[in-house]
Length: 533
Image 1 (spheres, one colour):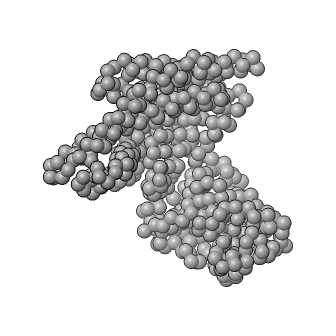
Image 2: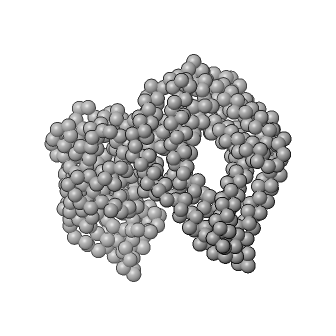
Image 3: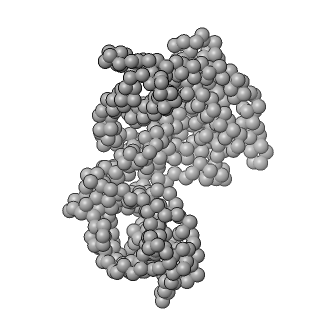
C-alpha cells in the first residue's frame, strides 16, 4: 500500500572547501542533533526520452536509510513535492505505475541514473526538543545508465526539509544563515536534474527531455504567450489549449490519489478545451477538433459521475444542517447517508478504469498530436486582438439569445431548462474571454468576471433543480419505509424558494452584464494595438 508524504525542502550547494555554519540559535533552533550517517543507493527510472523529468517528476527505487522502497515525487508548489512511497520490491508497484501513466503513456520505463549518497543527518530541534527541520549533507556519486553506462560525477549537496506541519517561513530564516556561511541555493531542482545535466553527453539532456515531454509540458503560460512580440491569434489560442492539456495530464495522478478538488479541476480543463475548440473555430479546423471535443465530453461525463454526486451530497447535507431539530422528523441523516453511499457504489472503480483504459490514452495522444501539429486556419495568422474579440462577441450573442428566452418563459420546467442552457453558454463566454486575456488585457478579465457572476447565479439555480429531484426521491424512499418524509419536504420547499430568488435576481444581473460598455472595452483594444504597429 502506497503512502503519501508532503515534502517541503530546499537544496543547497557547498563550494569546494566550504563548511556548513552552526545553526544553533538560528530561527528558534535550540540544538543541532547528530543523527548519524546513512548510505543510500537509488536507481531512477524514466522513459528513454525522459518524459517524467521533463514534467519535474521523479521515480526511484532506493535502498538504505529509514524509508527504503519505491518513491514517486510529484510537484506540489514552491519548494514542495508529494512523495508517494511503496514497499521495496523488484518491480515497479502497480499503484505507482498508474500514477505516471498519463505522462509515460505506452513507453517503457528504464533505469536512467544511479545515485549513491553518503548522508550525514542532523535534526534541528527547538527548546522543547521538537523537530523543526532535518538537515542532510550528501556526498553524491551519480552515474548515467541509459543509453549506456557513463563516467560518474560527484558533488556535495545539502537539503533542509521542514518537519511535518512546520512553517515554511522557517526555511527563509535558515537560508539567511546558510548563505552567510558560504552555502548557496542549488541551481538544479533535484539530484536527478543535476545528474542528468552533468552526465548528458553530447546530445544534452534538456534537448532529449523536451523532445519526449509532449506538447503539454512545453506550453508557456498565457501571460508569456500574450506578451510575446508578434504573437498571432493562433499563438494565443494554442497557448491556452496547451495549458489545458498540461492540466489534464498533471491532474491524472491527483485524481487517482483522491486529492481534494482534483476531479473538478480536471473536468474544468476538459471543458475549457472543448470550449476553446468551439469558440475559436476560425483559428482551428473543426474537422480536426470536433472528434476531440466529443472525446473530451465523454471524459468530462465520466469525471462528473463522482463530482456531481459530491456536490449534490454536500448541498443536501448543508440543507439538513440548516433545519432546526424540531423539523428533523425521523432518521433523516441516516436516510441521507445511506442514499449517498448507494449512489457512490462503484463510481470510484469506474473512474479508475476510465483513466487506465485505452480510450483515455488515445485521447491524450491525440491532444498531444494536435498541439504538436495544429490544424490552423487562415485566421490564426491574424493579430490576436481582432480574432479573439470576434470570438468573444459571438459567444456573447448566443448567450444573449438564451438569457432572453429564459426570461420570457413562465416559471416551471421550461424555464429551468432554458436557464440551464444559458448557464452553459455563460461558461463558454467566460472561457473564451479567459483565453483572450493575454491579448486583450484587463477588459477581457472584467468581461470574464461578469460571465462568472452570471454563471454562478445560473449554476446555483440548476443545482437547486437537481437537489429538488433528489429530495423527492429521498421523500419517496422514506415514505415507502414507513418513515416521516416531512424534513425532506421542508428542504424541498427551501430549495424551491432559493431557485425563485435566483430567477428574480437574473434580470438585474443580466442588465449589468449586457451593458454595451463592457463589449466596447474589448473592441477598443485592437485600435490601440493597431496604432502601436
